[in-house]
Image (tube, rainbow, N blue to C red; front, side):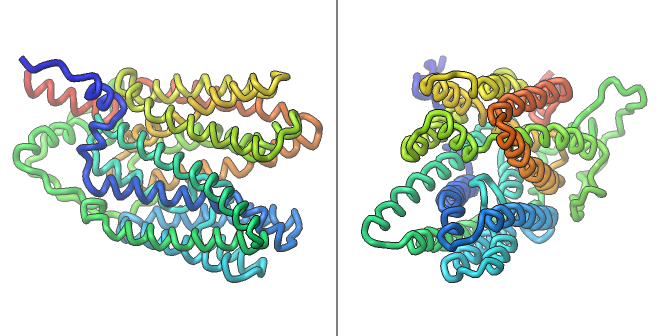
Length: 475
């Protein structure tokens, strides 16, 4: 009889470290590129508006820049993710990294508004510090391909953690670096340009790391062994779509395939998605757009502004609070995979995200700074715990060859919805009702959670179906 696992081994299993230790080299490289990219986003976002202000551009020009950059990045990202599987995922990741370098070089060397706008739209600059560009959809689709369904949430959880830590670290490093340079006599503009120079260098490093990815990252499915085929063929004969409707009276079990089907390569577009994938995509886009609109109403920049107006805090203290919430969020994400293993992906998404929505709605009500910060930290500890289960869920409810395109479409819808959030909050703040934005955002997020629970809680996912087939074969 084998000895019981030690406490350390049990904790490693719970928090996905065992899965991570057994992951391929490609997984480590993808986590590294995510970390590097979010360092760049976190650092550049901190100085972006200040950079334009130092160039004496008006607030209207800065606002126009933010909006057009977001729209341009969304359109380019959608185009690249739709052709990523056909052109090669590694090529798209390298191209995106080089576009980051292009933007960084332009921001370092010129001060013409329209040239800067062109570089931001054609290249990759994140106005908000959040994920933008073609990277996330391609990387998540690749991770889904490289991992097993029952351990996929472990890797996605660490993917989110690496991104959150990168953003927080980039913002902190950028703030201290620019402050130190200016203390030594550098002008604001010169110190900001150095940050964009570092941004360009990170793009080169990221491109080099992406070149190290193996052929296994591409969309071509690996050949199946004779031992594996019986189980896989049984699963594929049971369903040709990612989700089953067992109550459908017209459902008929197809005959078992006589030989392994040859993978067909097709250019993934909305029109070529399978019917079930398309229905699932439409439902998810509707729900995610509600959640993203709410997120856009209360980004960290507006939370900082609200707290500054309410409590008159110095910018250093505000920065410390926001950075703390980012690190707390990272810790919460580590536990997401452990919870998902016990209650499932959808329930994990809802039962962690719903309390954070309640904390968000309550945030503007306390009159004391301590209680407000406590609600903010409590919300941060849960708010992003749904990201890894959500990525794992999305990868499991569509066909493998459709993952990259679907994830790209979903990310595009989310980004476009999020861009409308600041307009809503701006209108409320102008009318003296800034606090209403937090209550409304919390309510919208709660509605999203209820929608996810109602539409998808009973959906059978890839790992569950494979487990059932395995048990049936053993019986």
